[in-house]
Length: 291
Ligand SMILES: NC(=O)c1ccc[n+]([C@@H]2O[C@H](COP(=O)([O-])OP(=O)(O)OC[C@H]3O[C@@H](n4cnc5c(N)ncnc54)[C@H](OP(=O)(O)O)[C@@H]3O)[C@@H](O)[C@H]2O)c1
Image 1 (spheres, rainbow, N blue to C red):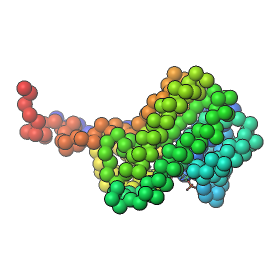
Image 2 (image 1 turned 30 degrees about the horizontal axis):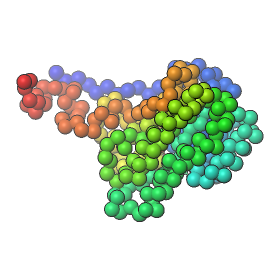
Image 3 (image 1 turned 90 degrees about the vertical axis):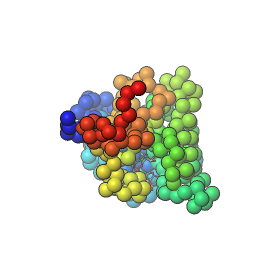
């Protein structure tokens, strides 16, 4: 018997959580000028927080900060810094403290990516991605930790799922994101006793992002099988960030939360999908009888 594919609904965090849960809080977000990190920033601002967004391109940051303020009614400060430069990050943190007086939440999301085989990748290209993703996270934690200790706040680090298996053409990002996951685990144990929480969000393929448009054929991605019936939406990742910063997650630290609609568990799926789960009769001939 066949049944219809059900797609997960896309909900807004404000439909689930009170709109004032982050009132008076301040977010510092690297990579917040675009894509996934901008969507997370917007969701957190929708719950009452102010924010500072960090990136290298001041014109884009300024434009994004204006959009975020208009969309949420909260203040957003554009702060230019390259996460590979510790002093630039310290200056961005100082500007944030000067403007808002505190930092409660940090998102480490700045990242770089491109497709290249090991054979075709220069040492410099490999190093650059590790410097932005992993060293950038380390530098951001170092620059913000005194303020996060003071507020007993929380970190979210943006990782990926591709390093759980061997993903071709992604050796640089795989190594970098494995480092991100490991650093967050250590941070959880070292800083937990001071009231600081840290977690990782690992997005799967998220539609309408720079990452997806640069790395894959969008049309092909949409046709891929997704256990929850669709590609990830920016709002899905934003909702996870709201949850992890909220008091509802006050006993959650050192964890990695994939937001991928179950895709990671599909990697070795051999049967036609979703046909094989929607209509088991159609694949009966392919399944060995029970022993
Ligand atoms: N898109 C996906 O489906 C997907 C899947 C898995 C994981 N992720 C992760 O999600 C995060 C966001 O990805 P996205 O697709 O939304 O890409 P994106 O829009 O390109 O976001 C990357 C951001 O990082 C900033 N950045 C890059 N290098 C920087 C540096 N050296 N210093 C400071 N900021 C820097 C960029 O701003 P500037 O250029 O202005 O510096 C940009 O705002 C990344 O961590 C990515 O690895 C994405």
